[in-house]
Image (cartoon, rainbow, N blue to C red; front, side, top):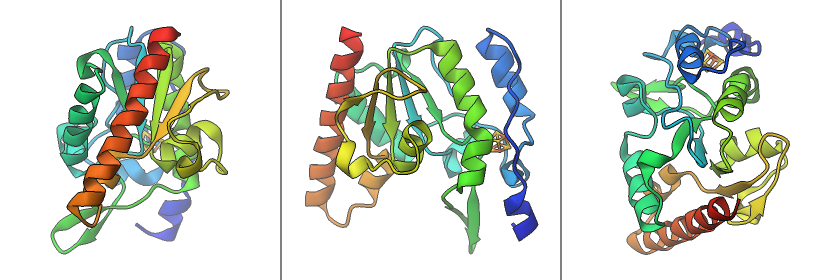
Amino acid sequence: MGKADEEFARPATPPDTTSLKVTREAARKCTACHLYKHATQTVFGEGPKTAAMMLVGEQPGDYEDVAGKPFVGPAGKIMDRALEEAGIDRKEVYVTNAVKHFKWEPRGKRRIHKKPNAREIAACRPWLEAELRLVRPKLVVAMGATAAQTIFGPSFRVTKERGKVLSSKLAARVVATVHPSSLLRQPDEESREREYKNFVADLRVAAKAAEKA
Ligand code: SF4
């Protein structure tokens, strides 16, 4: 990715429609930032339009890029386990990402995740706004700094604010927590277990708040 590429970004323009299907189809052809050039496909959100809860991550990973579905790789598997433990049925939630194309850099034959920058996040934000407008979840779970800062602004700190029911301009009720991929990066079994429990606890807060809303 050259520098000119990195700088190419304008806000995406979702269609004016009440159909999630039409919106998803339009997102397939999005070229609002350069990320589409290096990814296999757009990975749009998935789940029922009537979902009470929307989970928002950062961006698709290697597995998701190939499958065209969000949260199907190792981070998705650990998220599924945590959702079940928190009493949340994945089939009933809408799952998406702040950025819809996989950003990566090569390392040997592997594609290594690269954090999206502020321009790319801003370019993709209209798709997330469209999903929020169409699904109108009672509660949003922002997983990780990118999702949380997309929703609350760049000064938001997940470490300080996680596990609380907050409100933002984008959604009336939001619970921030870590991204499930951070659980996979823990240095040892003990910290992995501790972080996993904290993640489940945040999801329980979200489940309760969604019930009350
Ligand atoms: S990352 Fe988002 S804004 Fe950029 S091309 Fe993909 S869908 Fe469009």
